[in-house]
Amino acid sequence: MTRIANLPQLLFDAVDRFGTKRAAMCYHDGDRWRDVTHQELARRVHHIAVGLRELGLAAGDRVAILSPSRPEWVMADFACLCLGCIDVAIYPSLPANQIAYLLRDSGARAVFVADTDQLVKIDEVRADLPALEHVIILDPPGDDREVMTFTQLAALGAAGEVHYPEYRDAALAIGPDTVATLIYTSGTTGPPKGVMLTHRNFTSNVEAVVNLLPLGSDDIALSILPLSHGFERMAGCYTMLSAGTTIVYAESMARVPQNMREICPTVMVSVPRLYEKIHARVVEQALAGGAVRKRIFHWIRRVGDAWVDARLRDAPVPPGLALKHRIADRLVFRKLRARTGGRLRYFVSGGAPLGTGIARFFYAAGLPILEGYGLTETSPVITVNPYDAPRLGTVGPPIPGVEVRIADDGEILVRGPNVMAGYYGRPEATAEAIDPDHWFHTGDMGEFDEAGYLMITGRKKDLIVTAGGKKIAPQPIEHRVQSSLFVHNAVMIGDRRKFAVILVVPNLEMCATWARQHRIPFTEPRELLDNPQVVAKVEREVMLHLRDLARFEMPKKILLIPDDFTEERDELTPTLKVKRSVVEDHYRELIDAAYRDPPEEPDPEPPPES
Image 1 (cartoon, rainbow, N blue to C red):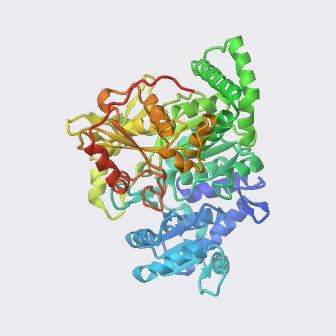
Image 2: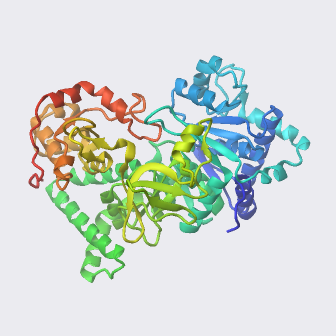
Image 3: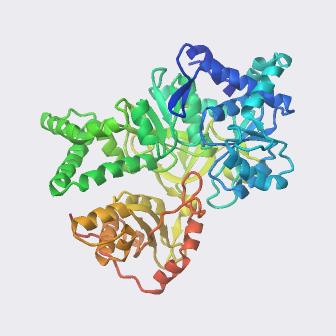
């Protein structure tokens, strides 16, 4: 693969190499899927870039994009990149006041908005944005608002391209260390910071990943994450374009199952939540089928685990086990593959830890999930499991060109061409994150296994230090609890307290299924949290997954709450990370009450239960 000097070259090379393909990307329009050819993509990028220039925008200006993922997002992105502008990626789920903060902090002169809903947000805060001069809407408004449309901007560019013959040469001349974009951190512990990522940051990541993963022009990738997420931008867009893989934009998260069956993708990039939902649906159907189906399903899981162990040891699978696996495949695994469209070769997972049990289940089904690790500040990939030698439970070895070491206190440090240029307008924060030897301090804790694969053990800032001085990493404990089919979410509390407690959001659908099996009457699932039998069942499930923890790590109380955490209540970031301080504040009364009463020591090894 030719070295990529900057992101415009990545686009132009893709058009030159794969222009005979039917489509670079695809989207759903009304009642059918429509293709966007490489030539159409390049033409519209050209016209939008010149259109921005005609509006007076120039290299170094900030241009925001506020839209769900769609082809026009990519066109606006590359138009900015080819003009030398710095685009600002904004999650469309953010409320108006948070959008205003990002636009002010970045000094954006223009913003692309998806539709009238996003335009309304801008109108609400426009008076507080003196730098904002231009608003361009992708979908024409349904009223008589005077706002420039994406089509009008492209027409302006088409008319003005004769005045800018040096467009391609100027785009290719943009230096690799030029800032390409600002992606704001999720702000779990303070105001979001604008991460400055350069062309080299992205292209080095693309080159490494394209050489590591089996991707080609025959592949189809279903895109489901927001392009404002650095993971989707690099892995789901730039990497796919560079490899010639056709990108298909899902209609919505709710339509992903249907879109998978329609599109039949060969590769998908997602966060663990998708895999958790697919797995939970399979298990729910199996457990709802009566005692016989339940026993069969548990047998299938045991067979799958044994088969995975043999395969990952690169050992021959015994004939008897191979036969059992073929039976398990016919009963369950083949149906799971069909749900993904029947052609999927592998998933890629990032953005949050993936449960090992889920990874093993998918691997047994012939749907390997290649888990990686990274941050916005590292463009984002640091490590990834190789396709031909994955180690489940790890995030893989460092990608080529990237150095990783573990500091004396266990923090993961990273150095390489993927590390950001710094935080926009925050030199002190930049100096705190990147030391004089150019090591970026991730804030994550980890260790290497004997094969050099990285394992994440927690988040440094989330570390709980009890009143007795004991240190507890809450994330691994929370992930264990969340691996239970009876748990949706969990957050551990206990910093500067005598002991730790854990807030648990039960999976009410699974609780309802269990209640029916045990003839427990209820009208609607929320009532079950008042039923002592159901509460005891969830508590046993939690403790079952924590039975081998050290005594000081064990939560002394389990606090059940009915509602999952949401962005609307500011409990989650747009990347679905829990804001611990917000959650703790929202449930302060419940938590304080738990600490007023002396804990009852839970049984660390509950008996097995059906």
